[in-house]
Length: 486
Ligand code: GLU
Image: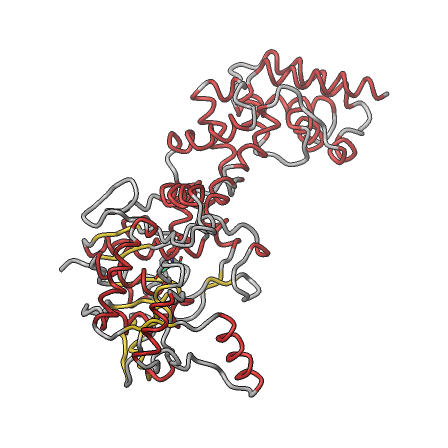
């Protein structure tokens, strides 16, 4: 049977990078093996879950391009894919387990459980449910049933040992004595996570459970439940945690953790997918830049590392820059236009004319790490008026006679033909030579005239791109500015 895997987020927050990486590994495995990737929303905690969060998670997966074969919006043979709509199934499973003697009603109050736990802690012992309600006599039980006392349902953990296979950690064996009789149905009639996740994995015929390491301690309970429900136990792959640069668990302190925040910051989905894939997995050679297809072709659960993965933002920036550098310019134009429009700079002729826009992108591309850098780097060229930076003024606009040098250059540029890179360069160098000044000095001043900054892409390329009229207009604006300062 072809593998069936699932991503099962709880919609209590947006899609964070850890969840996205788990989803990606499931997706890659399904695409690699020709299996099915199922999306299941674990929204039984009504207070903490919200429809907005569901939308946020779907948007995040959509942005990353991780399409699911069954789940919300797609449907499938196991509809519904929202746990909040499957509660009857969980109750039916509990009824079966009760019937088979694999579960029992527990009438213990929260106070009693808390007191017992505290007493054990004072003795320095870990407390595990003492099976008080398993020991009730038939009469005690009937009396409680008749009185309508509230109860939870606990799973009756069998004696002995069991084990599960983990693609990352190998075979993990455990003694069931360390697993308490855990609650599967709360006194409010709602299932616990342990029950719903296993009932759904059984129903949805999940063959491989790929999820975060933080669930590894739950797995013994799940294995026992699979067994009790008479179902084969899936294979597991518990993937390592993602840590920040300081080796602490990745959190907001380290910067953005929501996938859509990375989208807003101007990372490309392909770069993000490539980066996330290498968090805890490697193709087994030293490749780093890998297309989706290459990732699919090389993916295997066995190559997931057991050690924790470190989220290195510099590496993500580098990777994104590589994707931006390699992307065909017409595709890049779509992404860049969106951020430039958002910044209100799309009115520039350099954006409106496609050939100029492509040239602008080529000019800026080597200096760009994120899409937003097209705005920062492009702003001086795209804005209608140049703002001169204070340090640029101080560094490059104080030479004596500068107004005259610029005026002469403007005249020379009025005659240059064609107005292309070599010819404007000739005009700048020729003017400097004619005026007996260093070309570098004139170049720096012209850079400030065109961009207001001390650093920019190549000056002659910028002049050629702006064109004769705009270049001269900017030189004249500088002359006016300098004259006003005298
Ligand atoms: N809903 C669980 C979570 O978001 C995942 C459950 C699982 O993968 O087994 O952590």
